[in-house]
Length: 92
Image (tube, rainbow, N blue to C red; front, side, top):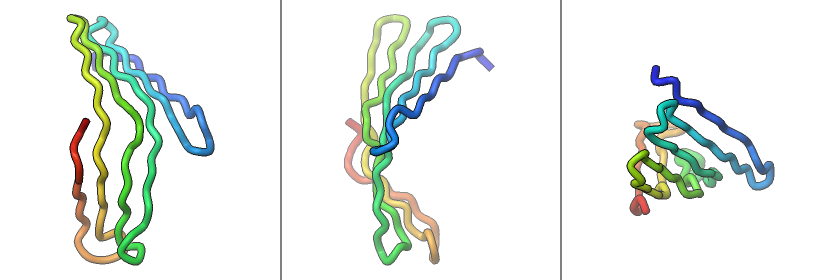
């Protein structure tokens, strides 16, 4: 709705890494970064634990800059039981 431009490119196959850029048409912000998803199955395949590796950046028109990385996430109930999502660690 705000005519922001979104660019995404897969830059590496092994390991799988992608980069992204979101630019507000009026120059209010730029949101960009790269990510690699890492995960492993746990609990006999009923859960997956992993994270998005890579920094994310937001730059605002007033000069404010924010950078962060996502914490680990565990998704349970993939095969049976109640589906759950739990984050561990902290956003840095």
